[in-house]
Amino acid sequence: MIFYKDRKCCHKAHKNRVPFLKGDTINMPKGKNQKMKLYRLYRIMLSETDEDHALTIKQIQERLAESDVTVDRKTLYEDFAALEEMGLDIEMSRNGNEYLYRVVSKRFELAELKLLVDAIQSSKFITAKKSRQLIGKLTDFASSYEARQLDRQVVVAGRVKTMNESIYYNVDAVHEAITENRQICFSYLQWNEDKQLVPRKSKAYRVSPWALTWNDGNYYLIAYDAAAAMIKNYRVDKMDQIKVLPDVRVGKSVFRQIDMAGYTRENFDMFAGKETLVTLRFTRDLVGVMIDRFGKEITICRVNEDHDEITVPVAVSGMFYGWVAGFGNGVEIVKPEEARKEYCEKLKQILTSYL
Image (cartoon, rainbow, N blue to C red; front, side):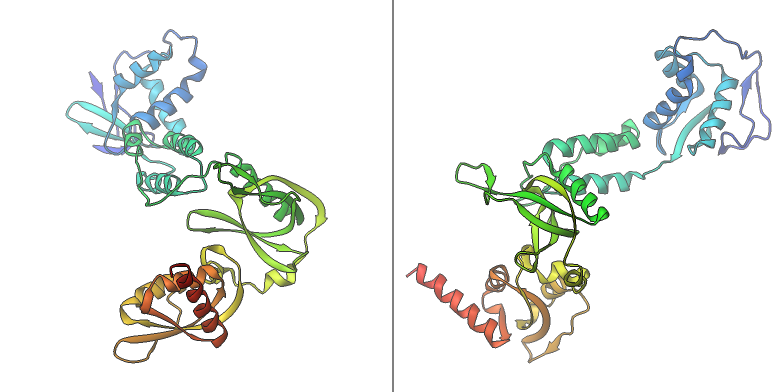
């Protein structure tokens, strides 16, 4: 016979008296893993229940028995209350004569986990091996049913994962240097014809790290090079043998002049160049491209029925000219005249290669 008290059809398990069978005993034989009972129950509820899947008391007892943990019905209700005190949101619902228990609120919603998995898989700077490890850890926050949905393959055109397994230690070392206000030295790598990463220079680079930024799936270090007296950008996955030096960072006044919010917009593919106010004239069908590139804050001036203009700060470099060239006649550098002439010279050099 089942007794009920203060019963509602669906409620929190610990806030109401849960049904128990007459004759239930508290002192049942204990298995050797009895001390792990609460942890085992915690893992079972997290991994085998969610908003769409639940377990009965009998099923929970069977799962615990597989780990050599025995527990009576009444003690389970007390354990549910203990888990809720720890922050686990357990809900009970009735299905006919059965009572079902499930975890309805977790640290991460399934949609949030999917978003994190997609970000990891589409990131170029995270290696394939580390991606699998990170996603494996994220599945611990999902039920076994939800975990199957996290087995996703995000297809990003041309996306090549880095081969540098030390990327995480690099990021950690850079953060340490920034926090401790210290300079760093490192070897900067490049690909050779044998498809091997080799040092670009025999001498170590020495810089003052000021910030890390994300651009097109890669981590970049923004640092001040005292020898060149300028801010430079470095791909973190191309950095090797990073050492935090005892020397205090320099270049603070220069770094403060940078508008970090617009830094990645101005630096095409993070190639540094002289910051210049550039006026671009473009066909009206490219308005969306300009907003995506330079932000909604830009002022768009109508030139005629077919063309608009914007004036934006740009780090003028070969990558910027390459970006402009990609639109053919759709984009024209109007001013400054210096940038306009330099662009023309580069186009002539390219044309010469084909004549």
